[in-house]
Length: 133
Image (spheres, helix red, strand yellow):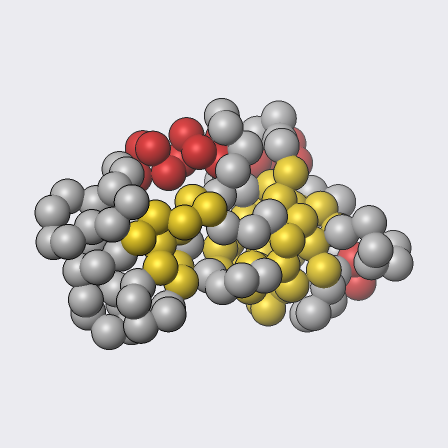
């Protein structure tokens, strides 16, 4: 699906429903090759409005993280957990949480992770099976 300057191929609510209910990650790719998981009307790299909706990979690598010990009310009973920035295979970065990482020693930059279904809202990651525990 191409977007030649008209409305975005999907809404922010469609994006959220995609990962919370359909268990998939959606993103956009521009003709310049930039891929983003962030909803928008134009490419943040080149400014073009030629965004094409793409299915994003469920696999990626941790590029940044923070262990949340004092979370929002919604996640209060899940703390501590790691909040991650993940570079997805095939392009795009997405943020999410990893409840199995309860301290800084439980996650490392470069760890392979994958997006999985969750009992909570948000993008939930777990360590990829090929990654040692």
